[in-house]
Length: 592
Image (cartoon, rainbow, N blue to C red; front, side, top):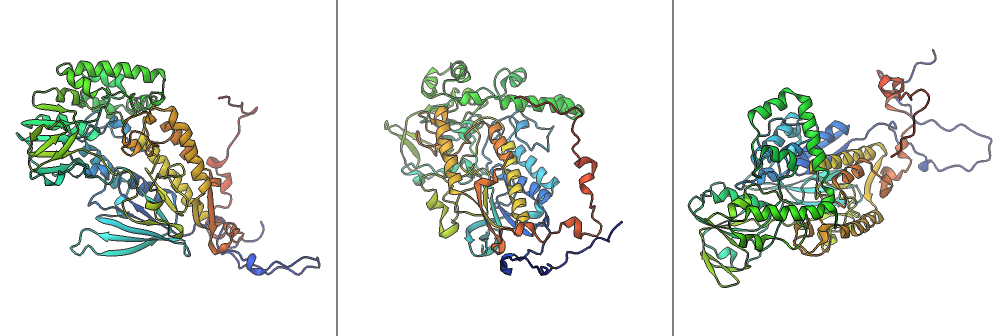
């Protein structure tokens, strides 16, 4: 049956003598890499952040990237990211619970249509436990600096231990740095004169003091974003009096996927699943699967509402207006103050269960005036009115510039803060030029205005897994988005967004708190558009450097792992699952 296969790769043979008149090729240019063509080289990845993206990375990278060393650093003492950090009263998901979970780990036991923050946190912790993520996580570790070493093709990462009295700093290094921090990570105080002269209790929604006792107190809530819209109805039930400072205007949406929600909850408030609902989900997997598919289908069908002049956009204006007017009938002056001049979805749409009902209660003062300043015991508006208060709650958002977290130094000493000081430009949200071997989840232009965010996060992780496999397989030292690819994506964004409501005249965190300017947060397209783009990498949009300056190093030494492993299957291509049998008579061409 022929010669016995070799079990180890031989050394490179000397070329045989030849009488042909050829020009000798210098030996240095033909030196073979002593590795099989499909042998993945050892690679180390540092993931920053153990929120949803970091948890997904901790599942998929070990699953799909062989010969991997992985560490996940997080500054918090527990995984969960924003769902560990945000503990304010009423914190909850603002899309349906069953659409805010991993595609591979469905949860039949959500208690509410819009799950509470604590329930979401526990779900993602359970996912991390089930799939072994904790073995890679180092908690209470804050990144102090990350600097790229061009000569070695490594990231040098300084990390501070937050759980020791000395808070000492140590250095780690990796081949690839993967940022899974997200955009809502660094909260900020509002820029109000005298804010820190206040002698009562002051708290930010993203840094909540769980010991805060606000029952029967006079409380001020500053802000009109999604956090404030959740905080107000929860605190209103217990406070003596609430002053709600809402200088902006906003649309309060009906519950997303309203047809199913309305059948369960016709008054528009949040609702709980009954034990009978949950039991049916568990006992009838096909029913649950179809329910989840229909829910996600409807959620992903709302993208047209973001397009200027669309029928769905016009219908939303009429529907939301009438709904808000009806629910604010007790205090019609609030409706006049709250109704926006801009279209729905220009700012983030929030369903806000119970919010409109809360702000018309007798113990709530809705205050649309600008705040002038804050004294030791009161808030003063620009009309000169002084309102004493015991507690101030700042639901005033985050720094979304991506430039003030820690020094991130790329090629040629380029600091990301300097590079992105005017606008954070990326290639399809996951990388930027001058920062080799650096990937981002939930970076600039990655969020979705409508649809499922979690599937986009999953696809971004899938993309990075493929990039890591390419780096291993092709003997790549550095992989970097081309500057031209970054510019092409930015020009595409500039062409896309003017046709949407996101560039209308509304102050939005999509535009870093500005009323105009470029959209920095959102993906330029539907969530399904993002899912498709991230599912199909264009490797030609990247530039590469190779180990040992050997562009042919990816070919290895002429052997495969099947050749050199004694027990390997050397007819693997005939395995039934790998043989693609075409239909008899030929396949019909699919017409779209």
